[in-house]
Amino acid sequence: MVLSTQNKTVYIYIISDNVGERLYWIDSQLNQIKSTKFDGSDTHTILKNRTIMPYPFDLVVFDSYVYWTNSPYIYRINQYTGQNLTLVASNVRYAKGIQMFGAGAQVNGM
Image 1 (cartoon, one colour):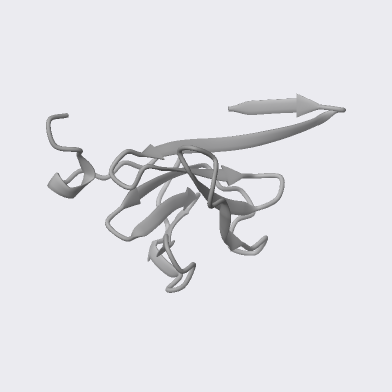
Image 2: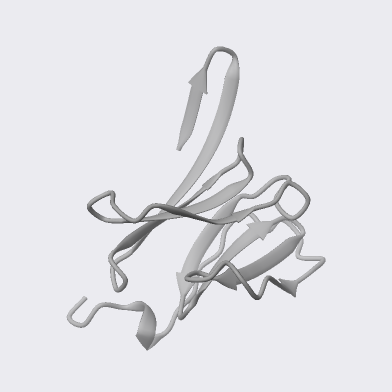
């Protein structure tokens, strides 16, 4: 999603965690990863760091972690505590998207 206001462009990348019933997003202007319940309650900042997130691009939730691309890097952080920031991969060319596949990533029947 791209928002443009007063000559500023803000890129916001949003994903839905149907298992955990939460929304997660990256706000590229504020250099933050945030989360909220589907009903809009329990909103909190998972990470705010200009050094780690100068140009974030995409994110995904898998197990207890939020993963995101910040080309040429892929990072992860604990989605509940905001701790355990880990560089998962470096020198990834054109890391513009990320997906995870596994039984735990799907709601039963979907």
